[in-house]
Amino acid sequence: MWIEPPPKPPQETEQTLAELAHYYRQLIAYHQQAAAIASSKLAQVDTLLTATSVSPMAASWQYPGSQATASLTSARNPELTAEIEEVPQILPEIKLPTKDILTKIIQEILTSNKGKMLRLDYLSLEVAEKISILPLYQPQVKARVQQILQQGEDFGLWSNVPDSPECWTLDLADFPDLLNRPPSQSKTTKKRKRKSAKSKKSHNRTRLPPCNRIEQYETLTGAIKACLRQHYPKTMDAHEVLAWMYPEGLEGKTKTKAYQAVSDGLNKGCSRKHWQRVEIGIYTVEPEEPE
Image (cartoon, rainbow, N blue to C red):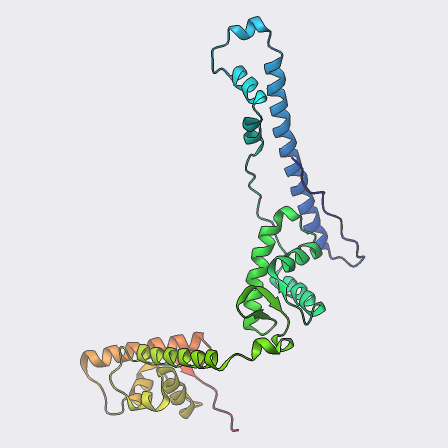
């Protein structure tokens, strides 16, 4: 069985110690795999040598189906020999560079190929070459590159090509034909957004009685943000926000459910950075800047 040649040591004089350590770890993994393959081959050859060295008389005393007979049979049968050789190999998980380093490498590759669409396979191969990763670890590199590409798109570092999930480019503005969608597709997209907005509104109101504040600001999040802005720099808790939303007051189970909905809304909005948590259960928001 043939394996890829060992990796090349880093050539640049300014390679960091971390990169050198990473290189030697890969070299160790390479030689360990080579030794395992050689050991497996040696065991197969020793078994065949032992079987063929048995004399005809001694062989006649072997029971049918004995180990020596099985070895001779497999030696005469190429299909059985091929099955023995095709032993599945489980590769250890390699330690890749940090997310920041891989992000920088991907951005450099896309920048040098500006105006082109690059497939994920090509990108992962380029990344693997730059960080000196053996080809047999390519699936692990590809999975990590795909993950970083998807995350980087959210920050506007690059773009996925529409209708081509395996293709990426630095800037979609280089492909005006992709940006100019037919009118029918644009209308469909707007309808989907409207349906999504309606579903969000209904979801926010599931535990809340009719509220003029929510109607005014369209969503529970919008109402809470407006409340915190109106009372800035004062900090507020769920009880105070609920009192602002329902100045006429609520009673019994209705108040309990409404309070829980507002408390959950404050907590979720804080995690989504709509406002800030000063301490447990206390919130504030920056005032809206004048235009």
